[in-house]
Length: 176
Image 1 (cartoon, helix red, strand yellow):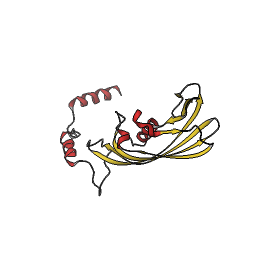
Image 2: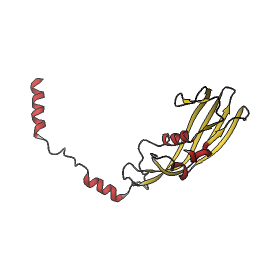
Image 3: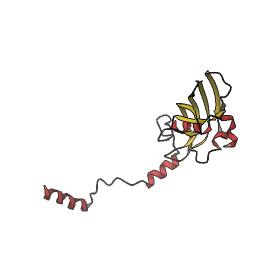
């Protein structure tokens, strides 16, 4: 993660109160993460940091577009994202993540590195199912892949009954 130094906020020397920071997560950002579900993208990250005497409060606002793989046809497509998150930073003897929303930094720290949080918040903004949006009432998926899926899908065999089920139904009727 050494190449992502630009995603850090130096907080030592800042006055108490509100401070705004802007970051851009682009293709070079996503290249640093091996297991990213996002192939590429352009996400604007606005962070409002409120510096208090004993802790920092960070409000994240992420908005942009990312390229992800369609769960249905496996082709990439562009997906818009919009996400907000909070991160609280307090200080202690050593650095560790206390919870999803609370980070403890050592008293000697002078900056907070945010690349991992930005990466995670982008992925949290993704929907569970990533499917091409419809275009003019039709699926935006690759038509050839959908045709292959239809050819290989199991057919509905509700018309022809399996005689083994008849025997089981007979056993149920006997016990009633």
